[in-house]
Length: 170
Image (cartoon, rainbow, N blue to C red; front, side, top):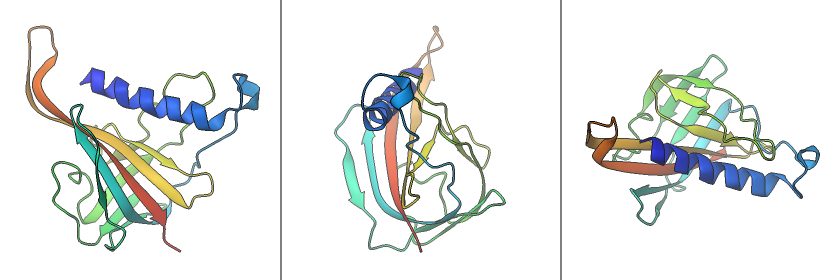
């Protein structure tokens, strides 16, 4: 499980550094994510993979699936939530409690920690609203099955990695 956690973090860090810096000096880095997720967000696209397979992408832009992140740490999800593998377990229709902390990804830094928690579950999600707050993505993973061996490692499991892309509802 830790291996997949590291892979997600590494990909996230590489993309953050690539898009935030013009050269290797930390002084030239700019803030690339917003600290604000409050508002209504429409699910636009979901991509996922199992273990190390190729990503599958599903377009949800024609659906009306809304994630309303409210200031009081309440998330209200509405719309026809698809039952796709484990990708929507933490995003079922209804009211949820969320905790969000901003991402701080300066050049050369360690990968950021998890910054989105839904219903107080340890879900390993990273949320990155664009600086203009017009788009947002939530990246996560979920391990299903497996057993813990004598070394404390999970074996025989399937790891689902996913990314949900949203657009701001005006």
